[in-house]
Image 1 (tube, rainbow, N blue to C red):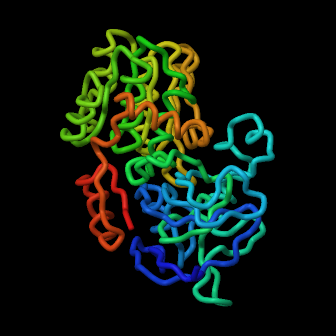
Image 2: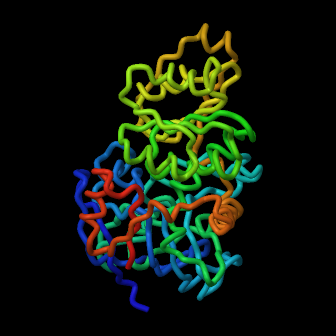
Image 3: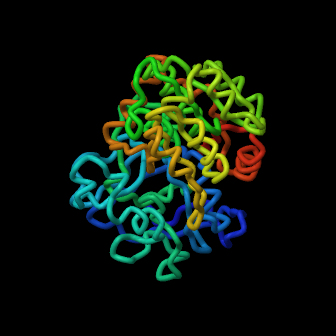
Length: 371
């Protein structure tokens, strides 16, 4: 096949994208050439495109891809041409975190997922044959392209009947929200949970808490009443407007305790994180999954944290092992326990500007671009 393909490129870090022709480098031994059918539009993509998260101009982003294998490198054995695949983050496969089942905490995670090049420093995408390198291999995949070279660690094989557009968001956002609940916090049945920010990631945390772990109380906190209403349809027992002055007290009143057992922040906003920690009850555990960018901090009342035995833990990609967790979430959806189809909106790749605008305004909780 031709090594020229179409990609959605961010020429500058100003939030703007353009559809352009790009050139794929020769496939390496540890790569898979994938024809992309769909890619979720994630807040991380938009943050990189404006420079909040690490990126460079002339970038091909996208990290929630779904497609079909076209070709495999010589060291790839778990997929073959014609297989359907979903794409997730990349990892080295050899460090202590990777070999112990925690690849989201790979020792070289940031370099591999945000570095914009292969591990050897070469570029998988060029402006033309022999041309300038393009910031690519984003999360091992750069799935905002019709065809892309993907590191093998990012590739999850799925059954031939899999709806790739529906399940593409499992590669990052959905597994992050669900994994925060199921893995990082290990929410218990009959417990109380508060989820701050119910966009797609927070909505995944709501569904995982209510439907999979069967928490007794699940409180959604958000600025938009419409999102609170949807969260309650998807399992939340209560909704609290995030701009209320008494959010913490409302959570305590609902839980009939000095706070909730677990909490998830999907906003990355320091003030919201502080409120979340304050909302925890005795031995409460909280985690942030929203990425604010480097340099942000939150003040913690040390005596309160100490006296009540609170925990605040980090959570990257839901501490998930994608080759196991992505198929697990597909299974939960098929059982009716993870109804992500309720808030996904599809767009043609040509309509990317509309998808981005709807994502920013809240008209789309989860936008998926389709070729």
